[in-house]
Length: 164
Image 1: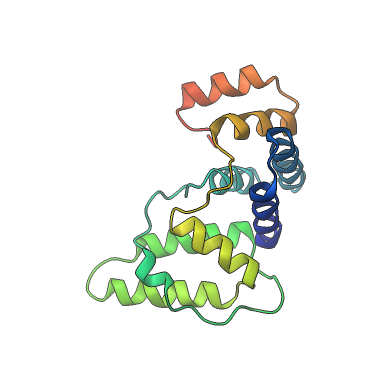
Image 2: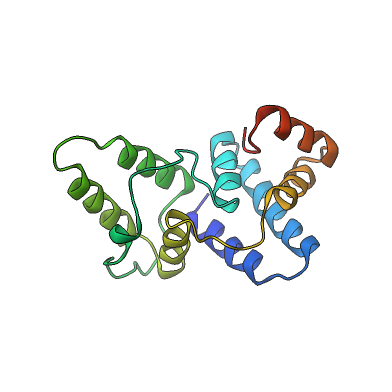
């Protein structure tokens, strides 16, 4: 799944005032992701739309997001590719790691469109305020998977994390 699809859905969700509209948009996106057959991409999408990274902290703060390259013209980034990039950025350690992480972030953002850059900047900065909290996300997962919402909520409670 292209990151552009997730970024567009995030913008739609942020612009929707009605809870059911948010649930419908998220469920639609998750259905598309699930149809591609990549369970990790579905879990990552749920995490991102919840405003969280599966990797938790990757060592990138607002300072690294201040000076970014110009956006790309066409969307090429995938959810799996960005997830892998985040994992690689998190693994950078040792002397000079801050500069290496900054270079990796710039390289990633250099291949992102303007919409994707906005989404990634808000996600990494902890500012993805779109009204897709746990209850909305659980209902969207339930709708996308055709599982009763109560079962999804219970599974999330027992697992401690909705993407799990």
